Length: 114
Image (tube, rainbow, N blue to C red; front, side, top):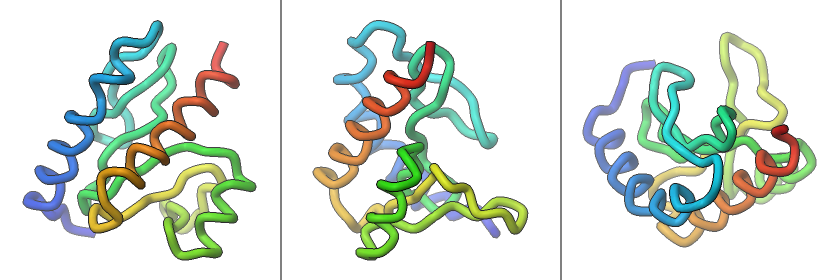
């Protein structure tokens, strides 16, 4: 899939604006994953912007099921494989839904990352 540079720029700007709250927390910084830079806690990425400018986060599989069933987010498919704990949320969902999903992803990774 081709990169939508305008959408990525928009998504990156939103993520950077939301990042300040997380970057002030212990163990949170920026790191590389999936050929981009995302927010991570203790080395594990919990949120990033994908090639279409959507927020991509790691959350529990059961929560991913819920979001997918309501249409609020979609599962990530990489190389034909469905990623059970990764979902993407479109930019159009808005800033608050992105913030809420980032909160969930941070809480999840902060709990499971030593």
